[in-house]
Image 1 (tube, rainbow, N blue to C red):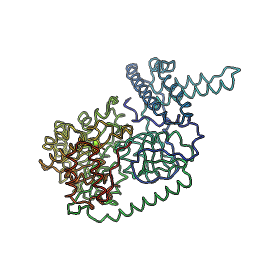
Image 2: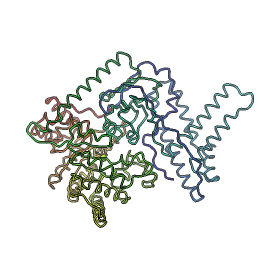
Image 3: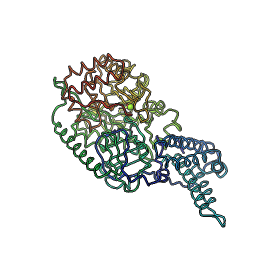
Length: 630
Ligand code: PEP
Ligand code: MG
């Protein structure tokens, strides 16, 4: 059995949500988080709970004892980390709730220490040769049952206290099991129609399971604007607020909730007046979307006649119909992680080829850029762990670990299968297909990946497999400072660049993109980031390599003028943002954008750059850049 880092951000905490007294849940309550996907959702709040993990009794060989104990220790460590995080968040709760929950967390932490319970679990693994999960279930159940075996003459108070302690033991068992089995949320099935999902945190894999037809919106306590969960929720068009601290502990059955993904405000149990305002805002939002739809047939062209290519980033197959609806000319980034998510085992070549083929066909001959698997960071994928393809523990600093191309070069079969599937998918489509390599930091990685690509082409030719008439171009993501600063060299080994400004900002400023706690430091307008962008664009131009920007700023109209001024002519973004960006492109001249970029690049203070971009936006009646999330 395999053990890796459990779901980032930890699991939803159903125990504490229930422990919080309900008496303050009725009056209207406001929470301020970060709006990461615009629109207004009004619906019934639905607290996402994990499904209880089911464990079948599993025996192990004597030779596996140490490995099993190591898995157990990793789960204990992870549980302690989650509980520590929870404790840090307590101060935002009303005092009453704090007094109730604090001792509970302390009890959980204590139980994971050198207690009889933990000794019992380890003893079972060692002596009865069972898996860690089995040992946890059996020992916690035995302990709880013992606690509940009441001696004669016990008082009511005693009985209640024993009940509570037994439940605490069972709960710590459930937490260990979740961390051992890496159980994902799969409880969306019983979601009432039109519900608003409320959770402590959602992983990208959980977001991929949400059906936008049935879900109205999302609000969570954790997560950053540029994290992958936020990106997915934007791509699903779900109004979303992340970082609404304290929310998930306060919702109760039947509570109505308003989530304003534009302002970041969440209102629980809104009054009639709040509800009517929210409905009016909802209507205004829909009307502005409809007005933008009028741009569909108009070209994305600046006022001085330069055409800008607007492509869509795709994270899920469910987004394919959006391409035509918003007028995206192609797919600038297909994040293939979704192909691997929410499966027991990695998809084989045929299954992958089938999925890529669907995407290529939906693009109707427009360019399609397929990025090979970018595992790591917050993108945790069970199928890869189950297959033993990813490291057992990646928790030192996952963003700096075996991410993207690094993993693929360690597991060349994964890469070969994906290259092969992409090539097969393109046969007979005459598509303008491109392959993209993520998380590159140096030339050697590109050379190695390209050698594997060439090897796959040779093998398929040898095997008599038909190849696409036009072989896909081979491109590199520029999303680390290392790649940006070696862009000249990288350009010699690839056919095009795609600038991933999400990771570029994260790695340049040392700010985790998924951590709302440092969201205020995540600033793509920081001159250091802009200089790396400029350097990469200049290298691309020197080597005549096409270049696009596919980070989140490509879909933010507040950045459009600056990017055009820096020389960008292809932008790839969440499909929903295409109309707004097109509107901006059509409102500016390249000359004015160039002037803005020249002035911005002369600055070394992010605030001055921001002020310039804001002034430009005001002068042209454009959206202004939001302040980085506070
Ligand atoms: C980026 O880092 O900007 C990017 C587009 O890749 P991802 O968001 O998938 O990491
Ligand atoms: Mg990236």
